[in-house]
Length: 233
Image (cartoon, rainbow, N blue to C red; front, side):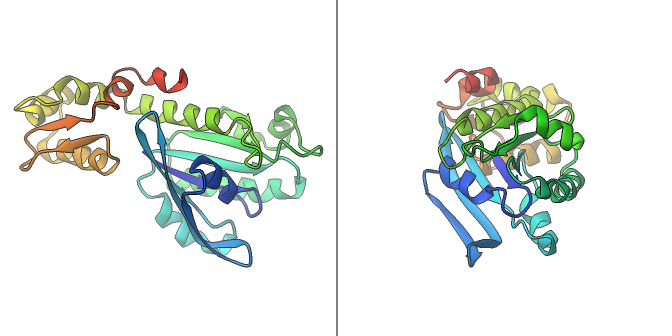
């Protein structure tokens, strides 16, 4: 799954990605500030999670748009300590909502390890634009709640694709899997093949030459059939 990690400058996006990937990530930065991107890969119960962190300075809007394209979910990181960052957070949230309308999003209220960190209720009051979104208090430094935050987002993202995923699981390995996929989802061939390509890139399945059949990877199949399992491990 492709996850974009975004938010204002100084909120701790790079550290979130570093923790999730256990340091197996790259960061293009200058003097401690991300100027292009962070990128890392994590494995969550066999599910490949591709993380793309955006630069937090306003002038890098084009780069944020490019990195956001095709994302399955959004981790929106806010600074729980610095009230002055709230206005910037509002600008960044409007931007990502414009780039990725309808894409599942969780808010990571970072820096909860610090004594000055505001509680979730305080953050919701100050940042009313977050209404309706899960706001999870985390510390990227200590790792507090980072895993549960990520699993919550993966669950929401997988539920958005639940009809497609359950159909993948049902017809995995069948000789005419593509035709069955087209019939069950009422899709033209081009759109059905597009789904196969999308999730082959995300390492959920393998597609045979000619696209007529596909196979869901064994560790992934239970999650596609029942996404709530991602929350129970």
